[in-house]
Image 1 (cartoon, helix red, strand yellow):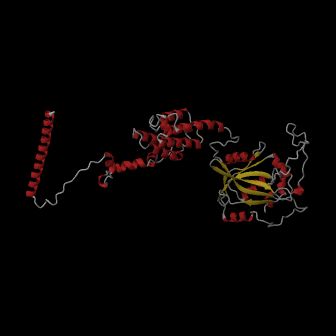
Image 2 (spheres, helix red, strand yellow):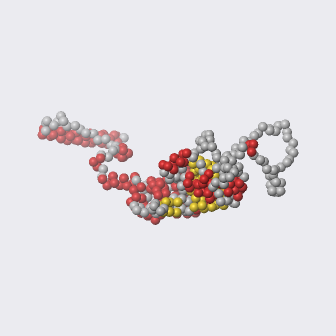
Length: 448
């Protein structure tokens, strides 16, 4: 025990000697500095050093003088990806140039940094390049994502939306495909499994699309083609057939678009006039009273996808109640579906007989037409063409109720005449009844 105590005392004496020696050296150093520079003794300050963590060092702002110009250019190039599309496709914007831009981005960086921003910019630029309905281009954009990086490894990552920005970008790409009616294929599914796994949100979106698209693909009984006819006559023929919804209706082209030169050398562009009329409409027009006028109204818009066309109708006011004649039903007209049933059904006291349906009669429609120039002179030609199969139009007064359509090219005089022929409350002119000796006037002479 005494030996251990002696050893401890010797170690303590050795430490005290070392500290005394270092203090003596420090004092000698201070004396030498004070003797050599006595005036600087009061200005000398002992600086203490503080140890900081690496996290604090990262948060310190970098002075502007130490920022390199190359770093600024690199940051700007990563922020905007629209410039990449404009640089590669300066003159022609086609599918080949769009694929070239995607290949340039893939080869520029092996880590695909900034791929989310690039895909958003590409989705916005797709309509300009005409590839918004191309499934191959959508699969190529999906291939931009890095593979097997955003796949969740456990149920906790799937629960907390593993890599949310990338998954939202993938869902946005599939939603744009859904808006344009593009159905994914097996390649799209393989890419989604490689990128986001089988339980990610983009994969769930893919499953919903594949469930609903086949159900609604052929549900429309009157489908509109993706590519509408470019010829205005063919487009008018297709539109009128769609409006009429009658297999017996006949489409007639009264005038084709052409260019005529007058004797004075003036060039005149003749618009197209296409009309449609069914046999039942001809029968209704033949039974119309000559004392009641008919009206030409329009233009009315019709949207076919992104194309808007306009049509005009020939109609009459509803028949007054005192002039209506109810025709008896023919029991042999249809044996499978009779038009009238005489059944004596016992009614209970709880049956409500006060139920009433209001029938709104808007008047019969006799014919429809489409033209590129809907002024009164062009519509007069349509009425003259209708008069060949409907001679009663030579006896019936025809009034025009025309609105200023967006596709009408009218001059000041035509506009004033169109305003004069619009419908106003109250009769403006007295209807002239044809005399006995006077021959029936033609339709052009009967326009007021």
